[in-house]
Image (tube, rainbow, N blue to C red; front, side):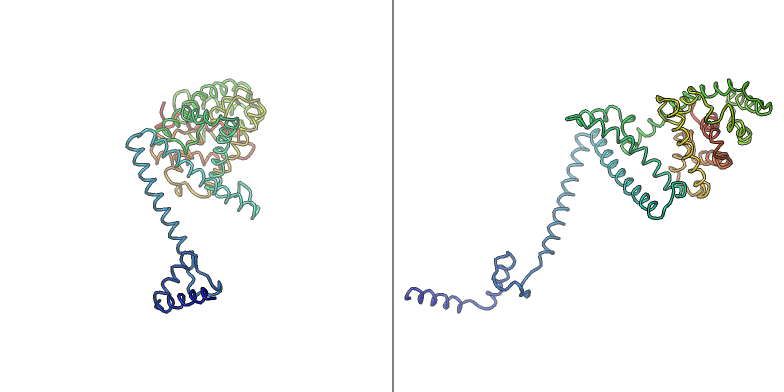
Amino acid sequence: MALSRVCWARTALWVSTVTPGSYVNRRLQLVRYGLAWGDPRSSKLHLSPKADVKSLISYVVTKTKVINGKYHRFLGRHFPRFYILYTTFMKGLQMLWADAKKARRIKTNMWKHNIKFHQLSYREMEHLRQFRRDVTKCLFLGIISIPPFANYLVFLLMYLFPRQLLIKHFWTAKQQIDFLDIYHTLRKQSHPEILCYLEKIIPLISDAGLRWHVTELCTKLQRGTHPAIHDILALRECFSNHPLSMNQLHALQLKALSRAMLLTPYLPSFLLRHRLKAHTTVIHQLDKALAKLGIGQLTAQEVRSACYLRGLNSTHIAEERCRTWLGEWLQISCSLKEAELSLLLHNVFLLSTNYIGTRR
């Protein structure tokens, strides 16, 4: 009892010497560090942790940006070639992710409002078409990287064969021009085969007028003359019936047309025919949407991409000539019916092979 009285006396003496202000400051410090006791419902002296969390997050983000900037400067100064590959790869991932989100929004809107592909706007249709091809190419990389430790080999293959394995998002600016030139060179290698096939089927055309038109068109192409729109549209009946309709084309012609469309020719004939039909139908739908939008609404890059898809190497042609050529293509495409899509397929060769400004 004596000891307890002494303890209580010392406690009372200590409390009496502490001023109210210092007590409040001490209480605030205890509350800040989570050491205070008392009724948790009293909020007068309680400080919300949201401000501290926000300041911590901003601090971490700021420090991360500083470290990332130093890392980029270090790579650019000591490893310039690797830095170009690194920045290209990171930007490519960002663009691919942005494309995926946009494609998801478009597909969600199609599902909600029961919209078909051909009812979309031109830019939405083109985005979905290109994204599907990009995903198909990336899917191949994903498959070959499934085995254990195969991902290291995949990175090596991506570095050695960027044109074959990577999509355009992961190409440098110089690679984009060089690779498009290479693809167009491969595409042009099929042009003589297509022309030779057209010459061979001339005797099989029963109508004398159509036979004369095909002969004149082949002669112009051999002389290096760019055919006029009426020269091509005059052959509509020939390409909708025997021997040049889509269902009448031979295997060798299907392979040559597949190379002209930058599709693989190493498939059975029925698969080649199906792929060419599907690809040509999509281009026809794109043409109708583009005609509704107007070529004047497209940017320079969109015009060049549209021309390249339809067979013209637009990387070395002035923008105005690209727009002129695309206008000619649309006049032909919008005049054709579904049964005449074989002419649109051959138009990849007919309209582009001798156009002014194309590289030989």
